[in-house]
Length: 63
Image (tube, rainbow, N blue to C red; front, top):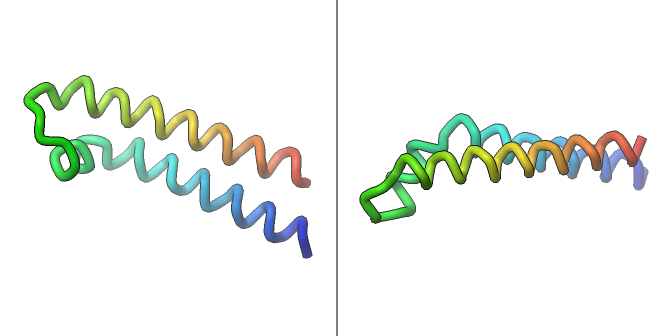
């Protein structure tokens, strides 16, 4: 039971990271009001990638 919960949490974290990568430009326009949106969207894509990797590692080590 605990293993299934760990895998579910890992999958949700991976999903969050993928959404951040895919919608980085939209999220930047919505949440940030400064002019240089290219740097902010690049930062969100990098953060999304790191979050997706962390979620994948959780899935890997829980199994």
